[in-house]
Image 1 (cartoon, helix red, strand yellow):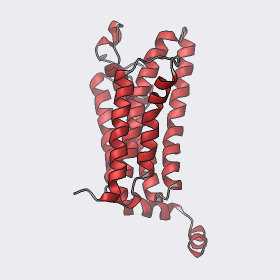
Image 2 (cartoon, rainbow, N blue to C red; image 1 turned 135 degrees about the vertical axis):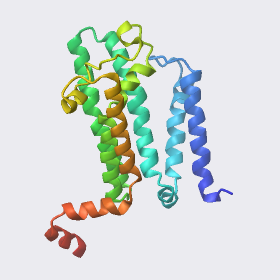
Image 3 (tube, rainbow, N blue to C red; image 1 turned 120 degrees about the horizontal axis):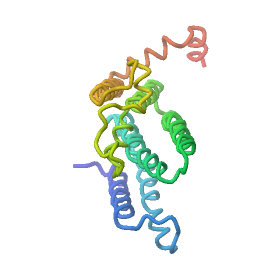
Length: 230
């Protein structure tokens, strides 16, 4: 039996998911706002999600370890679906290779900012310093893993024969080649991704006391004394 105090969150969360699914799959993906009602319906998932989050019991969420589950999951929706789509559509309309590279650079610069913003929002909401470290470093590993490169190849409908199947050599993956010394083969890329994902999971699932201890070790003793006295 679900306690009554959690029902508000669960109901609004379910409604937010249903509304988002309706907007994404049931309405046209138009750039123009064609009517006030469509505009309001498209805002409904945001409103319902905001109301759900506002009703979330913080202590219950901590007991379920939701911070290290829900926040990385939300980040991965952005990073493994929307970023590959942005790159795919951007390559179609950028016009020049330089314009596409500018788009690529700006999105990849934006991504660490999103990670830091999520961590800061968690911390400002009363989250512990140790969990902030786990979220920040774990999501950074996911960003650097190459998962987005794999998602770009799999979530988009490629017509270019070079990308209609997963290439045998990932010439573009320079963030991998700087570590292994050459452009990775497909299977080297898979291994690179797997290692980073495993390390991220270790961070997310590791004991909280490790990260609190790390913070104390990285803080000068004089500053620790001042903080404790304050």
